[in-house]
Amino acid sequence: MGICPECHATIMDEGFDIGEVIECPECGVELEVVGVEPLDLELFEEEEK
Image (cartoon, rainbow, N blue to C red; front, side, top):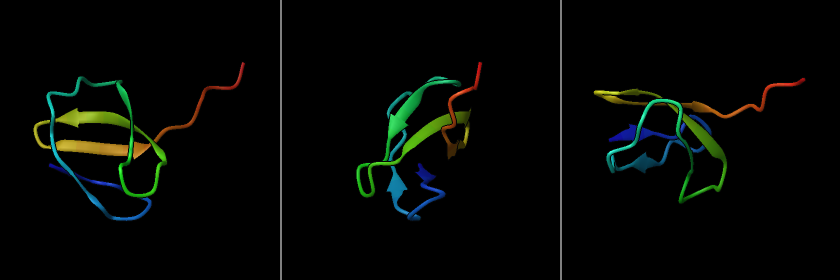
């Protein structure tokens, strides 16, 4: 399980892959999976081109 860095909600590990972008079920912010064991999440920021 991981923790949303925005609202600190608990997010259950559902077999996510590194680099996958998911949405926090509590606050709706987009999160990027940066680690899988344990689940580690960071706020997703699109790369500027």
